[in-house]
Image (cartoon, rainbow, N blue to C red; front, side, top):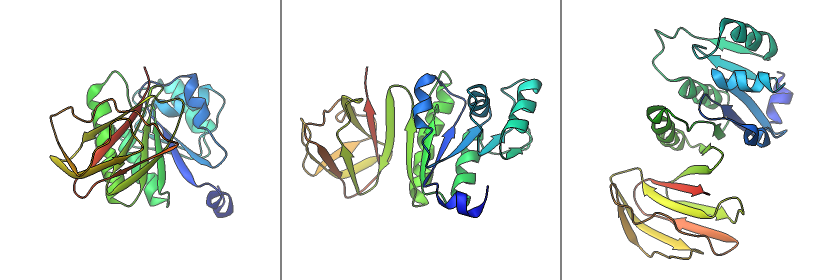
Length: 220
């Protein structure tokens, strides 16, 4: 990909090996740099989409699928499954950040492997610490991390908004535009006070003075 074409793309969208379906096709917008991580690359190729980058150890696909991924992708980076230190999703995030992307979506990062799902949620913290905006998206959820302030636009796809601490304590939590407001509240890891709120206005505002807060938008 040329530098000019690369510069037109404002975000990186990583398709990874969790639960993917037809809903994920909506994330393939023209401004997205598409990364397929392991089985996520196979998903893209199977749907006739050429990843800008495919990477991983490809231990979740067959040898035939791996060859198809390598031939169909614009760029392919393979690594040894024994020697690598990070998951394929983290490898994809690190690659996206190294290429200058600061808006990164992880699509299909939630699935039947709870260890991988939780690890992917924790990757939002790594992105935030590098000054990036990260989103973890599946068919029913969108998960973001708030450090300081976050504004949410009303979205008919998501009825509920839950706030769960990622740090041990989150202080000074104030909510504006929600059915159940909070003012200078403290949320503690292990308690469910912030679950299932509802955004009532066209825009909601979440502010906090200390800590890191997961903001989970969801639908049944």
